[in-house]
Amino acid sequence: MSNHEKETTEKISCAPAFSEQCETNSDEKRESASPSLHQNHRKRMIDKYMNGGRDSMPDHELLEILLFSALKRVNTNPLAHALIRRFGSLAAVFDADIEELVKVEGIGFSSAFLIKEIPYLWRRYELSQKSGVIFDNMEKIGGYFVSLFKGATRESVYLMMLDNSNKMIECRLLSQGSVDSAELSARKITEAALSRNSSVLILAHNHPGGTVQPSDSDITFTRAMRRALLPIDLQLVEHIIVANDEYLPLIKYLRDKDRW
Image 1: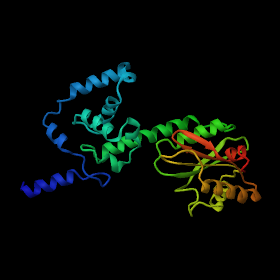
Image 2: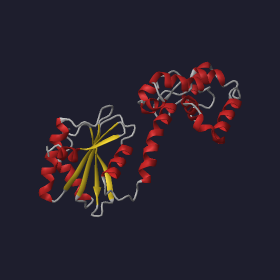
Image 3: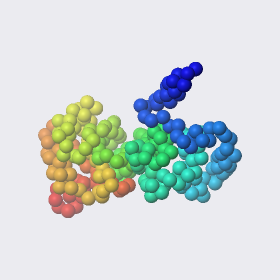
């Protein structure tokens, strides 16, 4: 086989499944000649984890073990240290965008994708525990949306639709962007509610990296939606704002301040 044919074969074998850079880095190439170099270390780490030591393991060791799945032949210990050093904490690593994660030397798309799946799967786990819940108090409603927005880096607006017994029919993503974006309107909310035969509605949106303090546009939008929905017997019972694992029920907040 000619050198040209060999190069072509190597390029094809590295074709990425997600149109991203092939995750064969210099570390993998260097260690592929000795695949058992870290085998004993990995076994010790997994044994420690499985035998009850995971609660006492530092963050970088847990991250190191996670990266075993994406990087089969690489010493993931220095990568775990590099990630936490770059972003400042384990939580910040999981919150980082894929585009930022791959800037860390040795982290390719597959590793970054795996890291980003963890908070998403955790959100789904928490939400699945709430299936069948009767949302009859603010603690349950706020807790649901705190779980829903956990790790989110973009502002999004959701509509929770309840039946007459306050059981959730659906929680639907309405838009990604601020609450006063052009794509979010009373008509869109009405269409969603009527499509699921729901008249009890709760809006929610997040303030990524901010606080739950409502903006003027949050207040104006909520008042306008409430007025627009009432004539067609759709009740907007609350608008939840979420930030940093906290929530604020905006309508209650305004009522308590005699501003509603």
